[in-house]
Image (cartoon, rainbow, N blue to C red):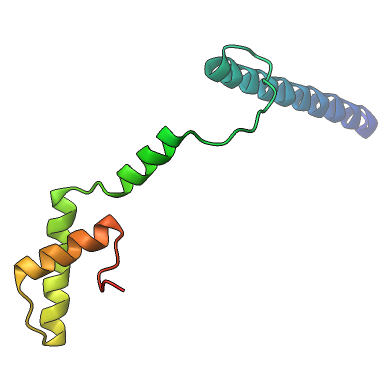
Length: 109
């Protein structure tokens, strides 16, 4: 068996594997498009401004936080205050943590 024959078989095998890879990639992309849009062909992209309702939902989602995150923040703030040697009331720490989580300016500037 000559090396030329092995070389040719290698090229053929590589070409077949590349074709299988491209075909599977195209099949996967078409399946994802089908699942999202209901069509295997990509729809034309359109550009539009977000609705006011979407902007309102985004603004409201910033204001949402859980009590668990508030408790963790209070615990961390109390530990930081104790490490710095500053006395801090838990009610004040809770108020400050809620202000920080809501995205407002804690210093009122």
